[in-house]
Length: 125
Image (cartoon, rainbow, N blue to C red; front, side, top):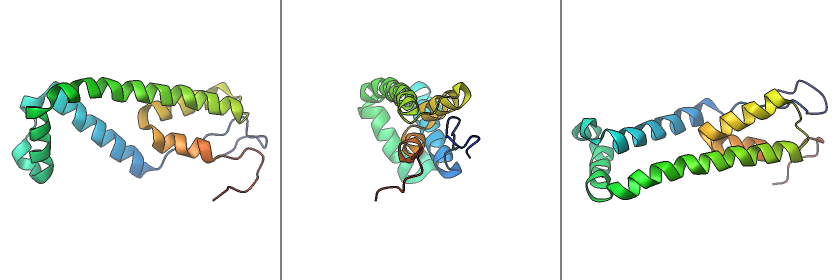
């Protein structure tokens, strides 16, 4: 949705599918890292067996990987701000929305911003 014809306040929400997938994955990952004893592994079928294996044999990688995941999301959010500047999105509210959405949902949001063409040129395939 464009509020102005120049694209200065352009913002588009990520698809609900990706929002649910990313939120579900990061929530489950957080649960496995911080409360592994509470995860019902046996009720989750093959996913539970895989999760249990990672918790039992690769926990330090998962623990530090959790922090790395959020650092990557932070950098993606900052990169979204740079892209907003490059594409002429000058509304502070639109820039804040792009940062927050990209921080929370990563590439699911960043891809929308990268594909945005502010001057109306057709997208390259």
